[in-house]
Length: 637
Image 1 (cartoon, rainbow, N blue to C red):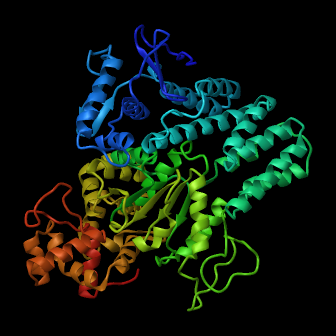
Image 2: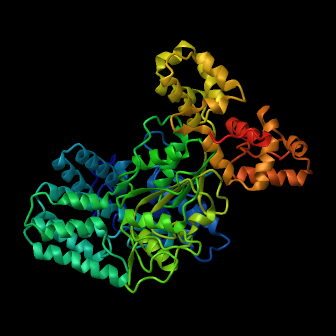
Image 3: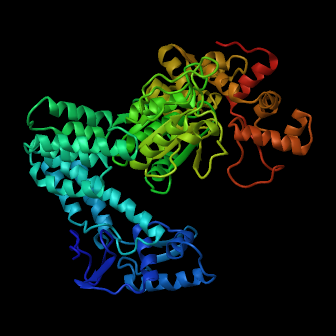
């Protein structure tokens, strides 16, 4: 039976349900949805409402193995049937299903589709919980769950494409059930959740957050022995099936239950276990990057994007963008958000084994056999927080053992977490750390493009727009001071190359030197021989950041960049200018420039243009640093 939506659709409109078998009703009467292939197309469009669905996705859903030559024509027939079923939009009379450059887009309202209504109720329930209104939260979350009729699209799961969409919907339903159960437990009404949690744990035995909620509900109901047995069963299951241990938070909850009787609000530990946050503080002066942030949030909210690379020159704000997004995505990653710095303070790269060890400590992964190195101890598992074994040179082992990599991949496949790996040196470093399956996502920040990684989505950062750079400067020195000499303020941000790091350092310096006129500081920054000396604030030095990026370049790229820095300072360079500066032919110049683009030292036009017509640029401050190196004026300060 399909429950009517809380916001009824207009009379005569069709109401669709995906949270169970695919069904549709009009005015309370069920509608025939046609043959199976037509229903597969309809289900795929409905699973991605109000979003373009590529033709290839629809084709894979209907013919996963060997589509016929007439596949596109057949799809048009099935889409026409969907149009006839949906009717036109009551607001403007247009077709509900339209074709554009991104594919077919189905327009549908919340009151016409159970998944949209489910999402709206869940969002409202979580918002009420965050306000502390637990009773309203529990009611709204329960209303959402009442729309869940069973495994989503359970009649069409033999199609791989539809099965993936169904699993995504089911994961969303499970998360809302966990939210609801935890809220009821906090209200002291654990008994209403016990039976449902038991049934879901039987269907999803490896989902830890469900286990934690079941433990808490049993414990609050006075059934301590059963609560402890839930933990023991789960620990044995993980060890037997995956060679893992329960998370540290769940283990701590178990120990706490051993040492106390029934408590009134035991759900806190379970909520912490499910929403672990190991992120640096959100950047307080984050400015601009609105389109890039919107794109990153959309990608990380999509079930199809597991890896996103944020690239750009040193100081372009890659880390700030990644952390801003991570802080905004708490609800989307119930199993945690984690940040790991890939480099040491001196700019040298850590080893993959060290990074995996830190990830293990943060996520509670126990790594069989430990990282690569000398033979492991006799115990069957070694905690990831154990000391990383030494390599042949006496330092940390660079490689990660197959057992460690497999344990990490198993954890990723079972959890929906967000991992930020910050300042990645190259592709080889992170290949073994990226998810091969499962719902987790990874954001990589890197100066280079990491071109050897595929398939990934890339977001390239350049300089800020003038207005954004001025906004950042104003946050640091005060809008009133900015208004005293707006022309000088604009000269300052442009002399900083409009890079967030340099503008921020300049702003911090001016915030201390309150007596310094903006025009005088702009003159200092405008002097190529003095600009990098002026961009130091306390222990933050733009020159040192440029030096770290310089060390990442190959010897050939350093020599080339030193020679290109002169023409680049004149407003960019063309391929002809590169050939002249490098003293080489066209093919060699193209290879050199493209190598610098890949390394993040040179930027190229965003649109397609021939190599001879393109104008290439180097960030101003990197130009200045390269000239220092070329002329032998480099000093580490």
